[in-house]
Image (cartoon, rainbow, N blue to C red; front, side, top):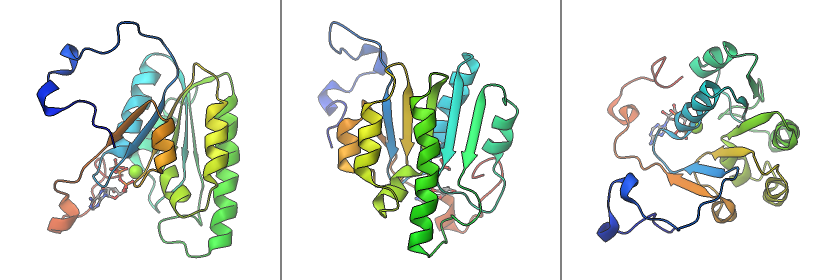
Length: 195
Ligand code: ATP
Ligand code: MG
């Protein structure tokens, strides 16, 4: 993957010299890598957009068994924010492939609505990279629809092992690298940090 800048050019972001002419457009953002912080980064951006008065839609492709802090928080912005989870039966632990394909495709229908509507300024497809990687969802369909999204709309796709074609299509790609994770030191997942 291309690095954003070389070591020699390693300046503070404000000093970064890009092209002379800048345009404004809705971004396709991919957040990937093996470190913790992909979903939290997407939710942080959602929070920023909500602060600007924009409408935000979130589809969570993988849902744990617990009620997450982000779900509770976003419900407080119910006029501006829609959060849609694939619901029970599709978690990290599911085993039935055809059920998972059907569930993922059902979730994609919802994504597609949010992607093409005129209301939501930012849409987040959380853990979509995972369902693409395991072929629960067809990559070509996702790419074709992303290319047809309204120009103003920002889309964030999260999850480990983003497909190289999504990376190629995206305007912004960040890879979170795991340096340390508390789980590996025997520290339990904690409310407000993990969920
Ligand atoms: P978060 O939702 O906390 O931002 P994430 O979206 O970057 O995490 P996922 O790949 O979605 O990470 O993983 C979901 C869960 O796995 C999170 O609870 C996270 O803390 C945990 N996790 C993420 N990276 C690691 C890692 N390198 N080692 C162990 N657990 C991890
Ligand atoms: Mg995540």
